[in-house]
Length: 453
Ligand SMILES: Cc1cc2nc3c(=O)[nH]c(=O)nc-3n(C[C@H](O)[C@H](O)[C@H](O)COP(=O)(O)O)c2cc1C
Image (tube, rainbow, N blue to C red; front, side):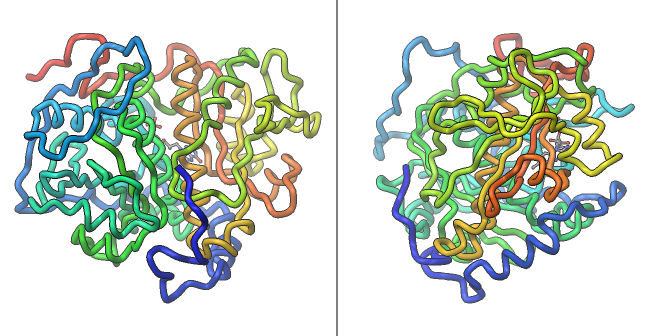
């Protein structure tokens, strides 16, 4: 769904510190476009929890139904419907696949817990709140449970804070917040941009899941942020809502092994070619329309810098959004040029079959949406990153998102037009060996439930 563009900076009203893009431009020049010196020893802030809140365990293990045979339609909302245990079952599976702790990976000489969604540096700044007719809850990923924060139905108040409000009253709202300090110790102020990308990844995953559940979702970036934060009881100094996803009543999420199996190709890539059709399939899925509350003044572009893609000349190509075909941009460009020389990005790019790069225009959006466009554009890039990772998992390709590009060098390699810049990259290729061994913690689609003891 798209909507007419509101006045600059508008949520329901422009924030008082709105600068029409000047502040965002300054931030980007100083921090957002510059790879910081990352402190790998720095930790992350602890995940959110609400001491004293009632904890409602979600059905365990969460289950997938068999894959549907026909197109699914949205179950019609019925406000008088008695609470149905299946609703909790569907919500539980959805939340597990959105932000649950679903995997243990044998990696880097240790075992680490993983989630269905990637997150910059594995810092997971995102928190998920759920508003339904039963009240407001916060999802606890590690416990796979809900904290009941309020038994009041806040949906109308929350929907009223969206600008524009949704066409129909939503049955469910997912509120995606960021713990502002979650990655700043490690990344410095660059972490704010990473949080916007991470929000996009979570919003993209929520759209994927709710679409699969027949709930016709829309992701909202335009809303009265402070008001929504107050309704959730957030301390605005430490945590803010960065996206809201509204939806009808979710049915079951359709079975899709790629959802719990997606992960970063941590073992690296085989020096083997990838067929062009596989890469095009990933791009086509990424480029599908995104159900947003706003019309982007300029859409993101997708580039492929090919290294070992059968049927595609090595070099840089841009996806034509009208035809879906790859148009040659420059011969002889290597994906290594997208990353700082000698860094881990360059080595990973050398190994991968190709890099997919998402670019976009900050300048096109500031006159329409003001400073807020900075986060909106990175949110959109995060949605595309989420789709690329999931599409790669579906087609059996290894993938890894990268924000450690050298922005200037990448823009030069891609020959981006003057007002466009690199936002996010993803490396693709067949994962090395059998890949990192993984164990599913919450569920194994199509297989027996994991042991509970
Ligand atoms: C926005 C974003 C940027 C990322 N940038 C990098 C990067 O520059 N280098 C890297 O090795 N991994 C990067 N990652 C991958 C994360 O490190 C990875 O998702 C996280 O460690 C969790 O592991 P998993 O994807 O296997 O679940 C990025 C992920 C996201 C979402």
